[in-house]
Length: 388
Ligand code: SF4
Image 1 (spheres, protein in one colour):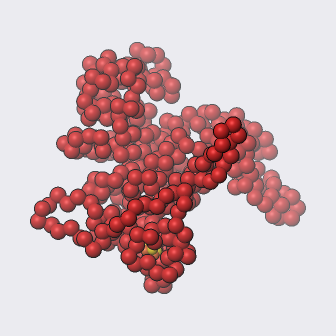
Image 2 (cartoon, rainbow, N blue to C red; image 1 turned 120 degrees about the vertical axis):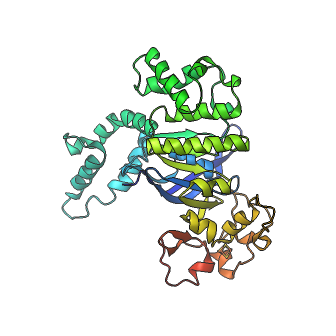
Image 3 (cartoon, rainbow, N blue to C red; image 1 turned 180 degrees about the vertical axis):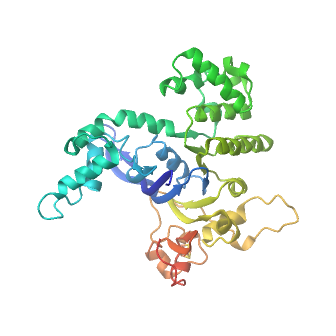
């Protein structure tokens, strides 16, 4: 069973104009039709330039953003509507589970769909026809469980930690909220254990964030994320604000904790060397869409999309004896996400551009079992490749 399945996720931000009366004049399509999955104990990487939608995906997974469209399943349970307003949640449920209630001609299809919702979400012996009400009655508890299951570690620990709270107060909060600890005294004992687990000292419990170094603060952020025993952790550029030596310590910590918790990680980064080191699967994003997806070996050793090749060619090479692959480097700027080019979004910067590239956005094609690419170079030449 997949821990997380993201299907056709879209997150559009409206662009509003007007002073007294605001009106929507367009959308920034930050994430557009993105699909991927995460298994327990595995790490998937999401890479791409700044502004390509990586962080929006991370925030959508833990519901800091309400998604515009698409589905998110955790342990095969549809959690997409959990944080939607009731009216929108009902629209979502009806469009997904009540699409054609009269499909069998005698009207009994409606009961079939109600039963389906009942089986999927409620799982109690209450009457399926009252199931929507039951579902919304249970929603607060389901939201709380989801908050516990999925956690995030942000890039900058200084801005993600409350400067007015001691480490003890900050880490005790989720323990009390999720009823892992009954009283503050119990929570503080657990916090001390957590601090030791992430390589800090138990006496740090009474200190404030400004009394720690950057690496120590990130350890505190990690301790907060793992305090509720999550099954899924989004790591949003978790090491980019740290020195290289501290980065290595934090990455080792992530690996140790993954072994202990068997958690699935979504690792968002522009550090390709790090992604190669810790991720089993990688998705490459450009202007809100995944352009190439596959296991790490395919993406790093045999990249296909011209943008992936350009990213790898531009990555720093630590070995001075190795030569940079200059032929894959690209020029130009990332186009505005408000006004994306027609056809393939990468076409203004691509030296392999063909006529079709300016007309049609390429479908995602299966190169082999573990490797997918959205580029006309392959979809037109590889007739054996099936559409994903
Ligand atoms: Fe280049 Fe065309 Fe492939 Fe886009 S679809 S990356 S423009 S060759």
